[in-house]
Image (tube, rainbow, N blue to C red):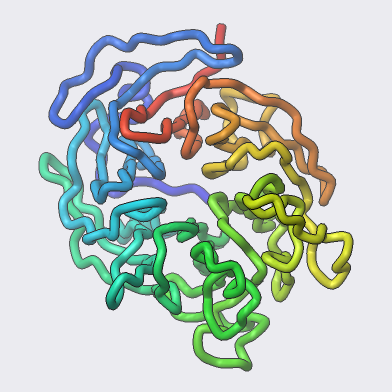
Length: 377
């Protein structure tokens, strides 16, 4: 859907064209662009363990850092105040950031993060707040609208990716099974599930397990492991990207009420080498549309709609952690084919499309950068 920003003070196209790596408070410097395969690569900002990107149309980029900071990159790098306290460690910290469908009117953004519970328990949470731009950007009125249930021990498999339906009326949430496996098959909790909610976090009407009440009313699909990509294709269908165990990363078409099998079946094995039955042994469970072994360890994905890479329109671009670059996938109905890999020599955590059709990616880790990718000349 088309989204516009309430207030802009630095044109995004000019920002993308003019700046090189910046740290907090820096002014734009002449860009240093390197050709890497299919891309002209321009570093835009130096970051600390970045996790997710949200593009503000004509006004910069929001980037989350796992340690609990939200950055506004608009030619300088500014801290956004008012961010929630996070349970940082392992795979936990500040997670996704997504603009509300009515951002142009409301200024609302959605965030996900890991939060502490009682004792040594933790769980993912989602909140929304108004983003106030200016010299001292901040979040106002942060409200928690959803939590993983139950909170459990450990620091892995939060997932907590967020996607709005194309009409903006529904909020979909990826909730990982927190490395506990069995909760993915338990319909009394929301771990290991894709959830279908209203924008205020309440269960959306018409969910397949609504008659069970409680958090079961949130569930759209189940049997998921660790979802790190959640996106709608140009036809309005929801897809997810999941990390497998030792092998068996998955791309799935997510449909209501379906059981995607974890931990009963998988196309990978346990890390200790023990076999897991494949999906073919359980026709009552939904097999993935595409599997990767060896794994690519997907970070996130975007369906490309721009013009800068015209031949890729409508195709899926995946940020690869283990594959250290982008993976391109074509989808024709339910036929899914890997079409290309584009090395970037770093673990890539997230990918987004800028307003001008170029790509924005973030490198994983303590010295990760925000990069602009344009077609190589």
